Image (cartoon, rainbow, N blue to C red):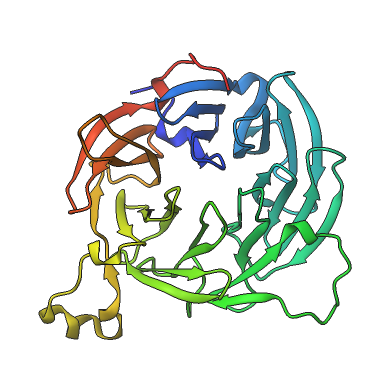
Length: 356
């Protein structure tokens, strides 16, 4: 295990295509290629201090950083854009309260505060376009569609459990003050985690208890499928669609990862008659087609690895889980529910050998 302890990791995020991930630490930051696992770049504690939030822009040289931790060099109320090619900061955005999250796409930068979301043009001619008032959003929930043909952003709506939709390409345009925001009433309790698929056509939301995940069509705003992660309360750390949205994976603070089929829901497990009365109105929910629990039972985030196959064999699907103890786990799964760990590593021990 690396001498950089698990307590050093403050946040882990994937880039927009889930091909890389970035780690914000008390001791700086690191950026990795996901598959194969390799370190791409890093920022030392001496140069960057403690980093609380990190966000990549695809595989470009731009990295958004927010300070925070036991010895931060940068304000927790400022986003600084680091150009890893020029090895210098090129932009700064300051705010009057704590930054909860930062999101980027090739034409926009979004900064999430507790009760506001700021939208900026980016990276060319950066300027403030719009401020959106929100309900209390201490989790910093906000997702941007990465597609160049869809500029949708999703975040918690003004009512508890609701999801608001906003087209960031219209930010700054004259909009009627009385226009009603597009919203989806997803849950009765506060949202715990949200996700948007690659095309921007689907969104997934997790309930406050972390037991239910609902998938919605963002054009019709109708429920597509309701999925049950479990019956025990848990914090959902991440929800991710695979590239064609045929599968969805969700991870928790207990080190569990559940995999669901979206396009072929008959692959998901169903309840036995004996369990229907116990779960009442949730009996219609679909359970994961498969799942796995990491031995460390550590909080993790997850995503899908690119599908792989060899001549004469079926396509192999895989999920990769990244734990806050610095470990990397790859599990392969099949449509009939078989799931096995294929590889394990300690990403904090992996040295730099690739370029962004």
